[in-house]
Length: 565
Image 1: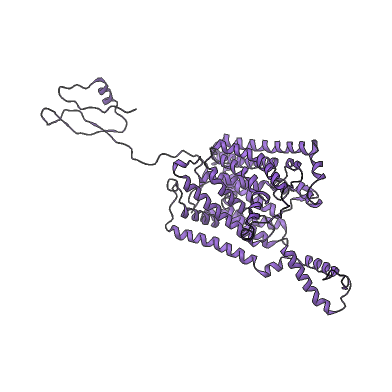
Image 2 (image 1 turned 90 degrees about the vertical axis):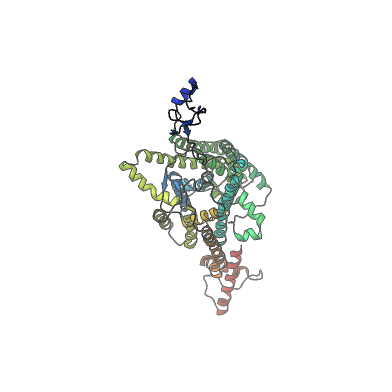
């Protein structure tokens, strides 16, 4: 409420009671200046007059941003603060992905510990954290078109998604191994987040819950009328030669189909807008995650075992026997067959069914909630001896989690080059030690990971952050040069992918000696023109040098045909 300004005492005029009260109760910030007021009759200053209070208005500036109390850590060279609990969750997802791609997931028809803990859950955690990242990038609030920042946020998300997607296409083009590259799907999720940032938080929760049911059902309906699709890694070749097939792979039939995976994006965005710094929020996330996992397992058991759904699946599986066993134990590679509606009752990894989505959303919420609870515990007892020990043990995990794009890319390259020659546990432990040690040292002395810095710089150059200055982020001294360097790095990765994909020596060396011998034997048995061959059996001596000269040619042509298939 505005206060009445004190009036000067002029001879013959008495101030009212309200004026006297206003004079005594001067507003905070009122400064009394020794300035006499002229007498209206003499036009001279009256030295006995009271003094006018002068109100000093606060300096104009931007409105105060909402207070965000998150446990953060500032690292050398980093441009901002990072939430350690979220980084630790990313680190666990990274270690889980490495384990899934390196270690066996099942033995004797049963899931191993790695398959039970990391199969499907690590990729889902990455998907949910995409949504959390989008929420953090947009200020952890609903973006409105009228606020004037929607265009900037949309452009920043688009640039980030395109950069990550191009990197995924490059890795898919290189085709270094059997790893299903997630980065292209990851980039498309960033693009699809643009309209979702306009939704309120409750609508995001509701949309995520609806998609968990609607997306698998509609996907099943659409795939019922489609021929069986071959699982491919998105690549530049697929983008140019078969864009429609690439879209089908990305949204419906791929290893990480985007249509049902929008569930993770919506739930992650809604969670990222919550008060993650409170113990109550962290506990609710962890408890609700555990409840979802238990509920999904119970419903799946009732449907498959009690209601006889498993027998219906076995009656018309739509898969060969060996693949069926793998799909039921380890999980299918992205989606289930569309031969029976009972497939929607399974909750196995990477099946993208309603129960699989509920289970993996639950595991993701449980992991994130546990890491945030650890944040709160360390905030209360971080100065104690146990607090320092736990924080020191968590620091390498959080550091690796702050560089997941870099370490995931390195993991794909290392796993592809190592192939099946390296011992699985040795290869896994080496990658884990390198990620934890190098991540900790890099974050402490350099800051952001190299790929993370490149994507971030490119994004800042194309669309500067609307809250960058308010957050204390220093503006790049030469932004276009930094952006050019980031673009050149991405271009070099793309060029390297094409070089590896087009290297004839790499292509020929990818086939093993065993497959060459088998293919050569099959060609010898069948003959070139479909007639029986006169070549001796494999355990008999070769009678002449003529057959020695022709056999490698047959083996080479067979290996090339198999490579093309």
